[in-house]
Length: 282
Ligand SMILES: [Fe+2]
Image (cartoon, rainbow, N blue to C red; front, top):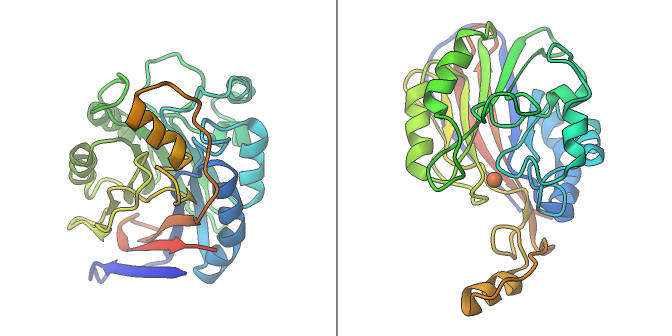
């Protein structure tokens, strides 16, 4: 099953176009499998040059392991973003710490929210260059509404943008509240290429290019099993709602879909001209 929706801004801009594929939160083995199935042909069909994947739930629904990160890089990811589950797999900390800040190597390309407390392992920004030589930056931010405490993402991104020279800038805003995500979209309109929401695991139908050229979607949606409660076995979640008793959550498997956003931008200015929502099943 495929759903393609396009919202285009008639900007009349000149220059080389760059296609960016952003894959929403991979959840468990079902999510990894469906992404493996689709990421290659989608990237090829749309001549994608930059692939960003949110991988924070890729390991059984909780965190990401170094091996899974390596597998996702093998599938073509340039940068992996995460969120509140970044510390769930302890071995990832050694992986993040295995490279210096200026390294272009894979462990440096796994991001955690930039507005976490200073001094924690890992980084929230990666700056690189695409195969055709276009400089880009990916920024991972975490929300504060209905989430564990972090520093203010709005002031954090102001400081981060001062240090980025690339014009193509993709922001993964890993946040719970729709209002906080929409606000970030408006706050960054014209200052970054895309603000793409993650974390809530349900794709929203509001993809658009904002007036000053920033592609926006409140939540790209989970790449994982949709016969579930946001990825988790539905019976286990229902039992918890019905009884309040604690229980171990396990990743579901049924009805996997890959949810992604395809953003087209001017490679020189970084200004977005289109965003397309992608939902692909088996
Ligand atoms: Fe999350």
